[in-house]
Image: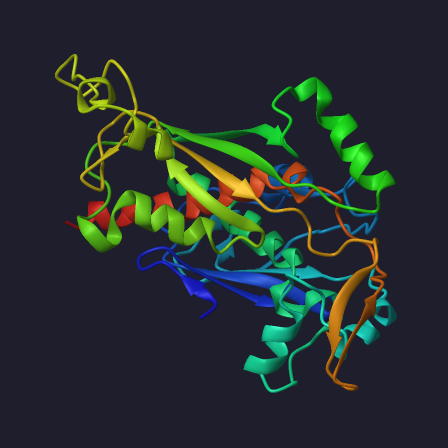
Length: 328
């Protein structure tokens, strides 16, 4: 559905071109210092503005309407609202009969029998990650002592950060898009978070990460490279009583449980589905394949704005794992 978590439960709502969107967070411990300004630090990182990001500009000002009193959380559900202020919905009318390739248009129409809000992708839009980022900022408060950071490793196949801008510029000139790879790292995660099998640290984080639109893959530690290694080189020798290891091929997780080393993983972000170059799609009204030209304002490289969203999803998952571990 639209909720994630057990003891730190996040529910998102809204549509890209609706009146408002937001997030409700249940299970926030009482007494955490919090203000709307605290949320803006990560919200600003998510905003567009860089070359290759959408020209759509929104203030993204958060309004905390419940769960906060005297600038501290009360223990009640925390509700945060955002107003949509800059929408051009007419750009999306043709998508009702001409669904975008590799986008949610067709499947959403089928699943909800045509009643879905198609404007800007509706509830499937990356705009909904705004709520995730706000929830992630709250989760960071729960995770005092844990530092979550990320970096872009690759854009459109280029691994040299100095060349990222050129790759994005080439995609813009071609009316096309590019993807990327983001590495995320969580330092300070205690030993013992996660449960064997279905609620392992990897499966829980992966669940949250795959809820971010455009994610196509995730790997922890050495990831797929582990399949080409021998056990003698892949194993992480334990070097002291804290569980610190000489290497971190496991990515900070063994047996589904955090081992006290940094939790490290990489995420693949696909190219934006909405591109200005002509494409072919099926006209659901006339029953024929036709040319599609997409209007609207879209990112040529979603990966440029994704790092803070990946961090937020990670923080949400880890906050829930931490609170779950504390109840054992």
